[in-house]
Image (cartoon, helix red, strand yellow):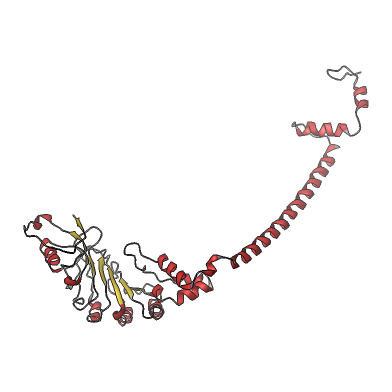
Length: 330
């Protein structure tokens, strides 16, 4: 008779000493901790264990899904009712408008950015009411260049902007690009009709070298720019002839006639220099000196000279109110 390994007892005695339930458990433990092949009588029992376990997992997952949905419903209910107590509901409309103005501010000059706040009216009904009722938010006007390939309805959008801007001072910008170097005639006529409200005029000219840029469309504004405070020419890499429209601009105080590299970007326009307090420009030394001598009320200026050697005059230019000066070499 065979003996059990290690203990020396007979196999019959070992089998008889085991309880009826302990042997299957021992066998399954052996199968779980080894790669042994289960016996045929064990397979149905194992399948029952897998099936029962899967049913329990499915039931638990369904319960988790129900609890998750219930949790989300309660969380949404909390959010909706909590929004009733939100401090933003107590912010006065005029303060909301000031915040929206700051969100649209341009980094370089602190004024309204070119893009009107169409998207701000889509956030909520209260914000839409604030946006539509605050003219300053609609006061930044971009005149499009002529381009038959551009599908946007600029003219109708400009009409809406000008209506919503009411009597607010306007910031008018024109940005020609390469082949689109002519302002759209319909848009020009529409915006020129409000030239008495222009407070800032920006010509952001980014055309290639030797591409002619016509500014004749500005001529009808002559004599009507009574509210204009700032005139700026930026971005250009070539000389641009600016029409004489600034002789009668009693409010004009700020003139910027150069790009960020301080290269000569335009011919010297006719400007009432005696009333200018802030000036930036890059011109030949003689022209620059003439400007400074005529602009005795300058408080700050930034000057560029294409050729510093031409600056040797030996004659002082007196600027009694000057507080800040910046000299730049191209």
